[in-house]
Figure 1 (tube, helix red, strand yellow):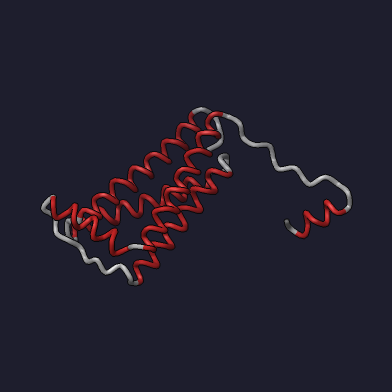
Figure 2 (cartoon, helix red, strand yellow; figure 1 turned 45 degrees about the vertical axis):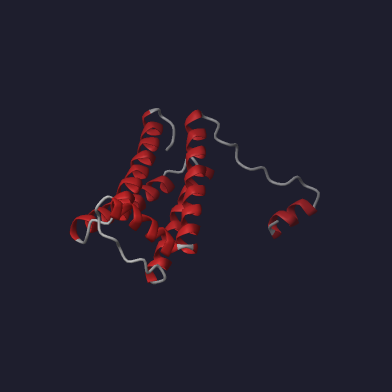
Length: 162
């Protein structure tokens, strides 16, 4: 409990009330989507950090079965830290989106992060090599960006804060 809240309640006053929860269907959908995305991003971030080589080997197995070249499986590099940091940020953005569905900043920043990830992977797939993991990430992150954009677009079109 914060010192301010402790001091306030120690004087015999009731604790300050939280702002009223947004109860519109659009706010509820935003909360559910943001929570689901935050939990998913956090889990994927943990997997990336815990077993990066195995994740890359899995995609190499699938990719070579499709006739695509295998990528390096060296996961313990600077890129591991960057991937973990990125997953941390998208987790926080999705979590904040879920907690504050009327705030427009969090979904917009989440869209930017996911579009950047998708575009960079698409460019690497075209310019570097046709690794399956590049294509899958481009599709998945592009899909997430589109889904969040549609979510806030629908909220905007229905007159609710997005």
